[in-house]
Amino acid sequence: MSLRLPPPDERLSGHTGWTRAHWEAVADRLLESVVPYASEGFAQFRLPGRASRSGPVSDGLEGFARTFLLAAFRIAGARGEVPPALLERYARGLAAGTDPAHPYAWPALTDMSQQLVEAASIALALHETRPWLFDRLAPADRERVVAWLAGFAGRRTPDNNWVLFRVVVEQFLAEVGGPHAPDEITGGLERIEDWYAGDGWYSDGKGKNFDYYCGWALHLYPSLWARMAGDTARQELYAARLHRFLTQYQHFFAADGGPLHQGRSLTYRYATVAPLWLGALTGASPLPPGRTRRIASGVLRHFTERGAPDEHGLLTLGWYDPFLPIAQDYSGPASPYWASKAFLGLLLPPEHPVWTDAEEAAPIDRADQAIAMPAPGWLLHATRSDGVVRLVNHGSDRDRVQDPDGEPDPHYLKFAYTTHTGPEVGEKARGVDNHLAVIAPDGTTSLRRRIEPLAVSDRFAASAYRDGPVRVVTASVVDGAAEIRIHQVTAPAGHQVRDGGHALAARGPLDVREGEALALARRPDGLTSAVRGLHGYTDAGLATAEGANAFGPHSATPYALADAHPGGTALYVSLVWLAGEEPPEPGVRVEGDVVVLALPGGATATIRMSGVPGCERSQ
Image (cartoon, rainbow, N blue to C red; front, side, top):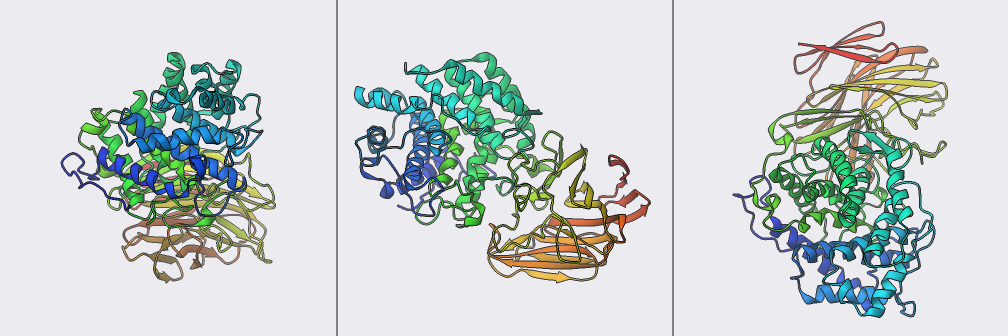
């Protein structure tokens, strides 16, 4: 069965052409494509691909749980009017998986185990499909399902979004009369209060761990719990936070639907739209219904047109094509089906305005955007002309789990991320992209492991990092597609200073050019990544790689280079560019610790690097 999509509806969906029927068609294709990999009794779905660190039995349970969540949204959204085989498949899987005598029985819930994650998906799916599945199971099967879920009681979890898995499992047990601990529900909900950073942003655990888990976990589970429990007071709290979050989050998607490529678990792909649907489902969204669908459908169409699902209808470990370096060791063959959360919108009835209103333009469809996000330490700038979104990172470093002696995680520690490029990762990565490196004579390169946030304001952000004798204070000024970086480097004499731009990748060869002050790489479609040295640099170059980028096998990173740092503290200024046209050459004047920029858009920016960096703009 190939993916057969309905004709586009340009009247209702003028931007994407996609409607609810397209979402249902993709969901049906995903669900049918995993059937050949089902074990006896449908207890597990053992999909092809690299096993996770938890092993094949856990991976098989994951295949059941995550596709069951997708099936649940499809079943509940159709009020049970789905092919009987779909209901039968998951009913049989529930009975077999919880039967200890079955050869493919699910492993028990144990401390810190992957089963705890999957139990939450099963509990949510059971809640949404209760009239058509749980309530129709044989009494003995219901008892076994409850007993298996009740194994969550007292289990230890990592101190991050996992605390919410207990919350939804215990709530489902409460509503079906199973054993549960109300204090464990309250404890999980109270724990995330310590991680709330303001403006709708949660850190995923203690520290500066900002990524997509804020939306698809730390907003999703509490709001769905409140919906399950009927707790209006907490629902109002979560709705207010979600409202603020979505005000900023709506900008994270390119005009062509590509999400910003930052953080871990990126192989979950279109799960990135789950909080958009959550806002519509709970009434918390600041977005008009037509804009919610325009953005969400744009994302689903983006991946569907680029190989996800693949020709077999499967979601693989990767971004577009299979690409294992993007996946963490906890990810197995079925992990990408966390993308099931993208189909949360199917719970909204077909007559809901989110499905019936005409698509409304996303902000990037209308004008350039610049969004300051002090809570995570981010500065976003997007351009209408090429549809590219760029995220300048002066805050999120996942410091709680970073190895102090290991390589910095490229999905968190780079200076910038975009919707059209990804960081170089894996053994073949050069580590040049979006990093200011101070290079000792013996080749040792300074590493940005811990970010010290300093400032985020209108089109300006700053941070610092230290690595041994090296300290780097960086200020970023954004103007249209341009990011201008001012680095205040303190280091021993004789070290090199290198500032890398965006790693541009493609399926085929790139057009490259390098000279004394400018290096650039260009894709066949014209998208250009460039770095121009504006002050302090003596050369420019390109670092190329093969098989190091999720966006394509061939990649190149432009950089600016200073051959010899004079010792002490010095300033370096560069233009970092990603756009569909050639980079401009902003004017720059350096007077001590003050940098005056003549920006491409015509404004003048004065940046003071003494103390906490600051910026003043004038026309």
